[in-house]
Amino acid sequence: MPDTADPIPAAVAALVPRLREICGEDGVLTDASRRRVYDSDGITHHREVPGVVVLPTTAEQVAAVVGLCAETGVPFVPRGAGTGLSGGALPHPEGVLLTTSRMRRIVEVDPDNECAVVEPGVTNLDVSRAAAPYGYYYAPDPSSQQVCSVGGNVAENSGGAHCLKYGFTVNHVRGLDVVTPDGALVRLGGKASEAPGHDLIGAFIGSEGTLGVATRITVGLTRLPERTVTLLAAFTSMDAGGRAVGDIIAAGVLPSAIEMMDALAIEAAEAAVACDYPAGAAAVLIVELDGPAAEVEAELAEVTRLCAAAGSFETRTAADADERARIWKGRKSAFAAVGRISPSYIVQDGVVPRTALSEVLRRITELSEESGIRVANVFHAGDGNLHPLVLFDDAEPGAGERAEEVSGAILDLCVEHGGSITGEHGVGVDKACKMPRMYSPDDLATFDLFRRALDPEGIANPYKLLPTPRLCGERPGVRTGVHPLVESGRAEQF
Image 1 (cartoon, rainbow, N blue to C red):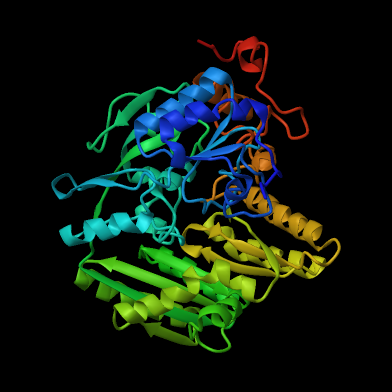
Image 2 (image 1 turned 60 degrees about the vertical axis):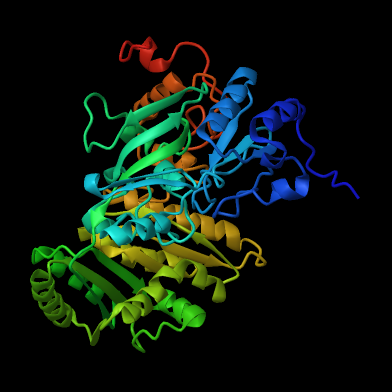
């Protein structure tokens, strides 16, 4: 029996024959049941069935699809592997979902220039695998690196555990081939580490598909370190673990990663993957050091001493790669693991200055106790990037609303302490309404002015990143008339 639910909107249906000419019969999904597979990214409480799904295999096909959207005024939403956690790839119900999952060629590994050229659908981990025979790896490593795509990483400016030392995606991309919202295929940068002029690569990275679609990416590679060691330290309180983090950094040691998990996160990880963390730990730190062997040995001794001085009751140092993987297994599985202890949860993402960690974590505990909503903390302690997991039962009346309130209050705490409403998960549709908590109306208007310079019709991933047009609750749509900044004489529109 034909699936008659979620019919294709007329404006999109009119494009289907031309989309099939561009992407081929198997590159256009119109059946409702197949379109529903793409109704969300990793944040599943936002869902929309896309008008149509296209799966191009070349940059030229991407340009033709986007050009068709521009010609007809139909919105499009770029999508990588769909692992994003802010609704950045949430489909538009009356638009085209353009997924790059079939564009997964590693075009070139160039060890002489310490870079690789890849298509956007290549997974993050596959870049490191391809570079390993040459003695290199790709440093940004989101927890989902086995499945997330480099194109999605570019859209969200993704990070990962090792960004404390090596930086985010923006610090490792040298060149981009981009299809702009009018369907033009342009090249930004190349293999060289620097290019003259405005930093258009920096502007594109983290723009969440609002400035176009990346079709080819040149990433810098990092030489594999001579020595890597991983240490696990257990504490009887979060405060003690937090003190150890501060003491390590204050001592001048720069680990490649410092991760922290609280008791609830440890409980979830144990239930899911039996990671065998020390019994009775209220907090664990995972500290990773890499570099020249002699330097790493000296730093390991110092970190072990500082953890003990801060109150660690047990430390373990991985003896080999297998042990190192076991230590990381609990941390890397933590997000999914909380599904073992809670029917539903919200993955939040915010940043605070490292010195504010202890106070903010105490306030999160108070918020949890006041609301009756449990919060598990697992985060990048070294750079203050929090990932509180707000747990609730959606079968309990009002629990979802209380969880949303706690989640929002945590972001308020981050802003109050000089931090940010997002660290590495992007803004997407989930936090667009929270942008005014960080930015003034003039700030937001300036962002909007820049966005409209490339996308005057507002067809590239609409309603994401910025409140549309300025404040949530206003009628969505492209701004019309003279821009306020232009009207006030503070900006010029070309």
